[in-house]
Length: 220
Image 1 (cartoon, rainbow, N blue to C red):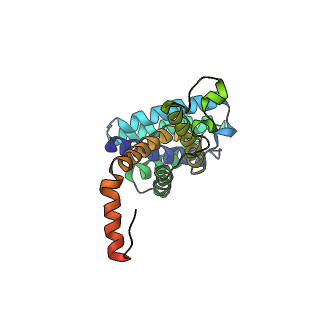
Image 2 (tube, rainbow, N blue to C red):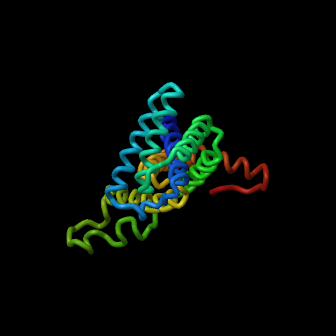
Image 3 (cartoon, rainbow, N blue to C red):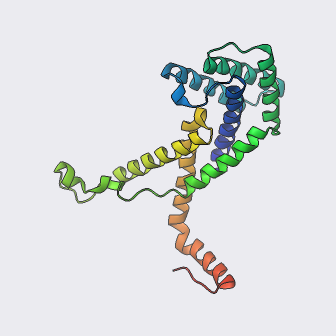
């Protein structure tokens, strides 16, 4: 599961970097609020094509060609203008740099996704939103003292999605934000599960030992 999460994140970072180059070269906005629903739908189609190519184990030259073709169409859609030969050459250069792992935008997005996942793993749902702030019997007349676990789960996931979507969009992951947020939630659940299962038996003793060595303290 961890390897699957890592692979999804790598694909998201690669895709986001490539699309940011397309936005930049075509002088268009990366904010989804600047585009119509029809345009966003078409962008998602190109995003899916891009992810398919990146996952397809294609020969390098074939991959470069297909990625550039997608980015040209994407850039024209985002800008509403035809991409000229000079801009296409810029895209080709950027694609080669990204796929080689030597691109500065790729390095930046790699750092940003790490920051995003730190936020994801430290996420805490707001207590007053879990269960919607009052027992369901008070809100519906149904005789139940507390909301179901399913209600709490849905509320937690909704809070997580809202918070991480905003952060991911601000960091430049607009085009891949939905998939990236879902993947970050998977990572959050793994960390949360490990903490619940192993906190007292594993993590607390380790921290106590470290504190005992460094400060003489103890975690209760």
